[in-house]
Amino acid sequence: MEKKKLLKNKIVDTLPMLYLETVILMVLGQFLGSFILGIPVGIAIVAHPQLQKSAFLNTALMYVIFLGIWAVALFWILIKKRNRPILQAVGTKPQGNNGKYLLLGLVLGFALNGICILVAWLHHDIALTYDAIHPLWFVVVFLTVFIQSSAEELLCRGFLYQKLRRSYKNPVVAIVGNALLFALLHLANNGVTVLSVLNIFLVGILFSLMVYYMDSLWCAFAVHTAWNFTQNILFGLPNSGINVPYSVFKLDAATARDSFAYNVGFGIEGTLLADVVLLVACVLLYLWGRKHGKKSMDVWAET
Image 1 (tube, rainbow, N blue to C red):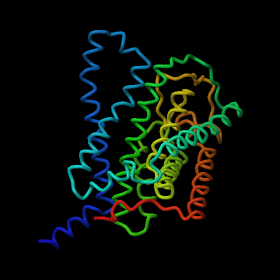
Image 2 (cartoon, rainbow, N blue to C red):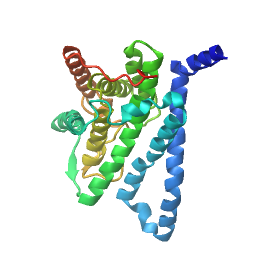
Image 3 (cartoon, rainbow, N blue to C red):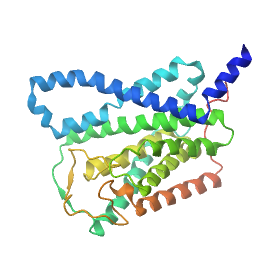
Image 4 (cartoon, helix red, strand yellow):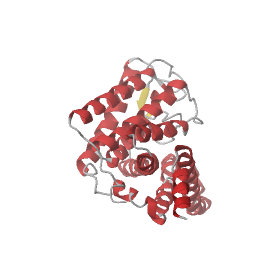
């Protein structure tokens, strides 16, 4: 009986099966979020039809439905005893899950994305005009972007990464394995290209290295949030091919052009420039981690 259980666990924890498990959790989470939030929002729109045209509301809803992923993922981690150690990686036990690395992540995410946007603007690939900023809306949308970005990180750099760390001795499998799925999940996005897929893969590697060398899933939460927020909400550019109606600056889409720094269909993420910036960031983090002998906490040590 024990041998059968061990064999079952080995099969379940293989890379293809963990990919399938992660995708199912993501789909169920998005469905749950859409269903639960759809009911009150639908009632509100029936009572106030003008809400349907609200750029702020539509943008916030696009992101906040990812609360469903948080709910489904945490439920799945808690309900299965073998998954419960993953909760340690989400909480404050890892040394890198602290306010300092959270703030550092926000700065890094803004800087990495901002460099790419600045080059595209200086190269005249994009033209931006200031629209407006509503402080309350700005803060609320930032929080919803954090929900969306952290939900993706919870699944990929939290759940999948940690499961792969348990199943495979070599950490490269966990680092590359979850980044590959992260890239594959974006294949259906608008304007996807080889460069854009490479970009998503590299950013997945970067986030994984933050978990491995900085022992900080929170830093990955923050960088992902700042990257998406800077691109979509601050400057009104496509984020992985997805546009949102609410932003502080507006893009003149009619004059935007493809170049090494901007891709009309996918945004800055579909460019050689963004790939180089992310590759450099990955190399620098790798060298820093190796130099200082950094390594993440083993959540499975006591199992």
